[in-house]
Length: 285
Image: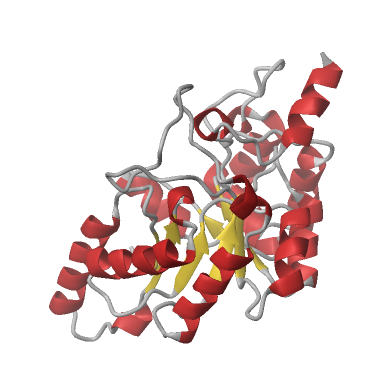
């Protein structure tokens, strides 16, 4: 199809398969160089201690069968303990055992990230799921500022303030779940893919809804990371379209006042990155 950006992570357990595919593809296509492919991977919560960050990047490089990754991210702004099997340690409640001090002060983790960058093991470093306060704290001590903040963004969670903050500070937002989710909005039952306005925009232009949402994200100035396992959708998602001004504004109108997050692993972690959202939801009930 032509995709060159591969988004991996320790947590996804997909580095080995991606590494095999990249190796085989480069072997079969001599005109394509390693530098033509952009590989991102991420360090998981239980590997935030400096030595663990260094282990994580080395482990990822070995799994991916490459000498460097193009982007290395701190997957969540949450540090957790690991068990004797090098997995996240679970407490009696079945949730992660949080390292409070390292979570509240990520400077040691970021120093190790900077070392992976200086050593050439990562061509760029960044974060994922970080809030504005978290970024502000990180930037106070960062010698190499994060290149990217990968976060959930779609018309039901436009994250406008965070997007603007990142762009103003030279941090590129990357949107995961840019097509929304199959999940319903609590209390209303709405879904991104059944929103009448969004569907009308797509049908009017002879496009798929995914193409409209990808174009909307690109127009807003950030990287869009769509995901699909269906070959036909993978192909159609790759076909770039441009939204007419009226259609772009119509999607913006759909997004106004919305803040529905579909990806929050607080029940796994035992820690909520966005506690104010829970407070806000409770206040509305």
